[in-house]
Amino acid sequence: MWRIAVVCLSLLAAGPSQAQEVIRLARIADIPDQYVGGEMLRAVYARLNIKLEFEDVPGKRALALSSAGEVDGEIQRIGTLSRDYPTLIQVTPAINYIEPAVFTTKLHFDVVGWNSIRDYSIGIVRGVGSSEAGTRGMARVTATTSLESMVKMLDADRFDVMVTDLFSGLVAVRKLNLEARIHPLSPPLERISIYHHLHERHRDLVPKVGKVIGQMEASGELARLRETLIKQVLSGM
Image (cartoon, rainbow, N blue to C red; front, side, top):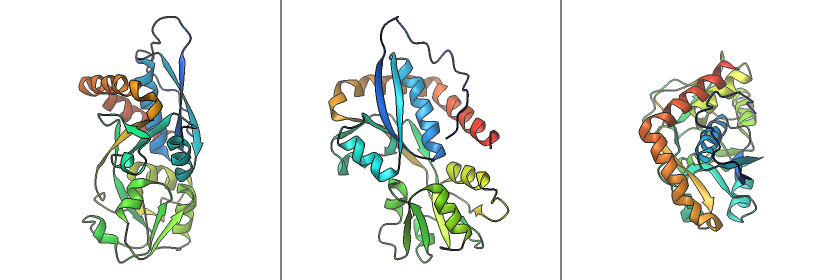
C-alpha cells in the first residue's frame, strides 16, 4: 500500500475537542485508485470530525463485508451498486471517477468502447464492478484475484488484454518494472463516476457526507487533492 504523507492540514482540521467517531470502510486491496479515493474521503470525513479506518480485502470480500454491515461501507463503487446490494446507500455527488483502459503486450488498435475487445481473451480483477459490467457476456474473460497477479498473467501471455482503471494499471505496471513490455491503448474505454457507499445503518450520515463532498467539489478542493495524490503515488514508484 502507498504510505504517502499528504499535505492537507487545512482539510484535516478536526473541529471541537471531543472523542472522534470512527467509520471503517472496505478498501479493495492493492488497487491504487482505491487508495486515492480513501484519502479523498479521509479529508471529507475530517470536516465532520469523523476518523476513517480501512479494511484491505479482495473486491468480492469487500462487498460481502460492507453489505452485511461488518464494516460501515465502501470507499468508491459504480453507481449501480445499490441495485445489487440494497443495504448499501449511495452518497451523492460522486467522490471520484475512473477511466477503465485496455492494457496489452503486443496488440495495437484504437479503442472504441467495450466492443473493441469482445473478440480477445481478457483479464479483469474479480469484484471490480466496472470491469465485470463492461465485459459481461464476453466469451473469454478471466477473473483474477488481484491487480498485480493480473499484470503478471498478461506478461506471461495468459490473455490478450487486461482491463483496469488507467491510473491503477500504470502504477501496477511500473511497480513490476514491466513498462517496456506492457502498454495501455488509447483512448480509455470510458469515464465512470464512482460513488462512496454507506451501510444503511448510517442512513442519517449520508446527506451530511454528501454535502461536504459537494462543497469540496464546488470549491475545486476535491479535484486538487485527487491530482496531488495521483502525482505522489506515481512519483513514489
